[in-house]
Image 1 (cartoon, rainbow, N blue to C red):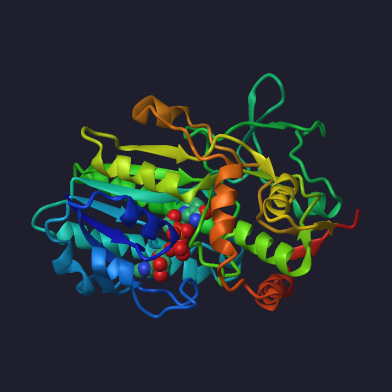
Image 2: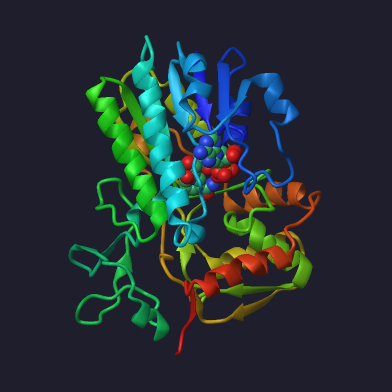
Length: 375
Ligand SMILES: NC(=O)c1ccc[n+]([C@@H]2O[C@H](COP(=O)([O-])OP(=O)(O)OC[C@H]3O[C@@H](n4cnc5c(N)ncnc54)[C@H](O)[C@@H]3O)[C@@H](O)[C@H]2O)c1
């Protein structure tokens, strides 16, 4: 099996490469983006030993056209991944994520032999707020209005003002991204689907929930909420939670994601579908920070600031029934177990400095994307 992995030097890519069988012939294409790889300028030794590594941007077609010939499966991970940052660095996100995907597909169309399958990591961000129920039917949210958030109305309400109940995200729900990042991930999906269908290539699109685990870059203040909270708890013993802290997310351990990707790469037969990949369990941010503090045995003060980020969604959890209907087994790592593994690694690292973090929040304040509730 010859596998080309774009963005393979990143967090998920590293774990995927480790998880692949030793007889897989791997090529990793990665620009080693300085925002992600703050502490390195080239591929890590471990990756160089295991894969053919090409340091290039996915948009630079000449850099990998030759190397891509004969590829069986292309795994497209290369992306800019900061949801908040995407709201003001819009062209950067369009160029890397959307143009990057079109450039990759153009390379594939020039190959003598087309790959058998394209695997894309999309995101739960494509759902936006997702779907809700009023007790009788499925209702979609048009997104939360800034005026409501300023009034401290954090949940999703119907037109009569009744609070709606969030539903686990299903792949057939209407995608309604609320961030530029989410929009770029939806375009990636549509580009891959359209190209693959027109060229009789199989595809698998995974809408990943919040991935966490050892080796998630700690020096990138734009992503990795667990690393950010852990840095604040260990350094200051205090965290600020936006809104009322009760928004929820689905945290999935990185090794489970690597397993899901490996299964998709090796799946015999046709897939050509979108699948959620998550733990199927919602965790509120209050629960998360409390669990982190407990895992590292630290006192914790929570500052419920009432601030909110424009474009943030309220609740997210994956419905895994489509995934299990095809791949059957899915027993993700529990958050308790995953955090314990994460902390063993974290405590040996240089933490993200709180000033780097505060600067990233300042950037959002200046762009009027981090606002205060008046409630
Ligand atoms: N980590 C998560 O919680 C999460 C959640 C949902 C979806 N995803 C998706 O999974 C994929 C991998 O995410 P990750 O967490 O490993 O991110 P990451 O930032 O750790 O890795 C991305 C890698 O892509 C490289 N890269 C970025 N732009 C590039 C370009 N134009 N050309 C070549 N390389 C480029 C970076 O150098 C980096 O090594 C992304 O597509 C992301 O959108 C991640």
